[in-house]
Structures are given as C-alpha cells and as structure tokens.
Length: 349
Image (cartoon, rainbow, N blue to C red; front, top):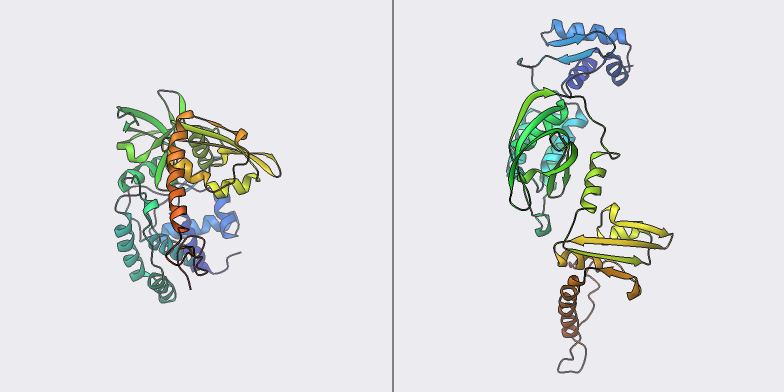
C-alpha cells in the first residue's frame, strides 16, 4: 500500500492524465490501496481544484474533465527518463521529428528535478544518433499521427483522403484501431465502414484526417494484435516477383538472417523451413537470399521474370570477387583478410 499521501496523490493524478477513464478498482489496484482510499483521494483532488468527473454503475469510473485548463503534466521518475530516451533516439518515419524531439527534450530537461536532470543530461551528452541510408523512406505528418492516435484512443470514427499505390485518391470513413510503425512506414489499422472490412492504410498517403465526433464500440481485430495484423497483411500482399525455397535451417534462424516477416517463413521440421519472398524490387529479394543457404536448386520456385535480375546482380558480385583475387605484379593474391573488420564490414579496434 502506498503510505506517502503526497506521492500517492501525484501518482493518482498522473494516472488520470494517461487515458480518458479509469474504474475505481483499476486505480486501487495500480496504487495498492482500497476503493475507499481512492474515493477519498479523488475528493482531495477536487478540493484542490482538479476537475475529476465520476460516474456510478457497473461501467462507472473517474476521468479528468475535458475542455478545462489542467495543471502541468506530471511524470514519475521512470516516465520522465523514458520520454527523454525516446526523444533523444527519435529516428525516421515522421516528418521533422528529429529537430522537434530535440526541442522537446530541451524543455523537458529544464523542468526536471536535479536528480533526474543529471541522468538526462548524461544521456544527451553520450547518445549520438547515426543517420543511416537504409532507414530513409516515406515520412508521416506528425499532426496527422496525433489526430489518428487520439481517434484510436477514443474509438472515434474519422474520415480522410487516401491515395492508393496506383495514384487514385478517394475519401475514406473508418473506425481506427491502432497505429503501427514498421520502420520507416507508419500504418493505420482500421475498419472501413463503407467496404465493411478491416483495412491497412499507409499514413504517408493519408491527408486531411477529420474526427467525426461519433464514438463506437471497438471491434475485435482478426489477429492477436495490431502488429501481427500488419505483418500478416504485408506478408500476403501481391507483388511483382515471388520466390519460394526450402531452406536447410530452422525458422527462427531463417527469419533472422533474411529479415523476413513471420508469415513468410514456415517450419518443416527442426532443421528445415520454407521461405516465401515477394516484392516489387528484385534487389531486395536478392539481399534476403544472400543471408541464407538455399540448398538444392530443385527446391526453388518463383516468378521466371525474377531470374535475369538475380543473374545480373550475381554477375556483379562475381566480378567483384574476381577483382579481389586478381594476381598483382608479385603473383600473389590481391585480397587479404583484415582481422579488424567486423561482421558489418566496418573497421574496428
């Protein structure tokens, strides 16, 4: 049980700020106190001027009243450090996120207590993000993400304009469920009320999101969670090129070495798996193939049109390999293995 009354009150207020509503039982469980204590603490907050609404009945609970000026955001120690870490390591996927995150981190540091300010300052001094070319790609508008996130939280229907891969633009009306970041692309998982089916929308192709003010009961997602739904949809999406192979390795190893979605790797036994690759870019498929031994040729099937692309890429690698072992004027091989080179091809000490 939380005996320190001021600390408990701050923790209670912090919880009330994290979501729209809490039941008394949920708050009591989080704080390790009785329902009676929760009711007394809520009354104390009201006395201090905090607008806490309460409802009775089976679905009753507490929430901070909307549309009212609230005190500054309250964070406990772990939450403050977590936010600082997230801001300092903000990467691609959202337009302008790096600069915005650093400004927010500077403001956060100014209002932190001394005991946490030193931790965050040390983190800011020691952490240096490295922009890498493979992390670039489509970016989502931060205001669009914020609008969609609020709609997901409140189970509120939204409308927006959406541009399909073909370039066709149309208006959508959906029940938003969740946002999923598949670096660097953000996806909105939502139920399309006109098509009457679950859909996946790329946030970078989505504009003018508008909440309708109409809240609905959340539907059951046809997957364990939103991330699993996105992975399944991406794994089964149509593509220009496909390749299926039986691989002499367990499924976990194949997924790790080929960076494949779970839905594209299936175990046959403890030492064999099937690999199902698909994409519009043959180079991406080639990169995945380089991570694993494919086994006998007869285990490979796929789009015939992929073959010349793989052959062309293979010839480039072969020419590079031959150049490395071309004899020099002393008749020795040109290539030599540098023990300082790590697995990523970068020199180390």
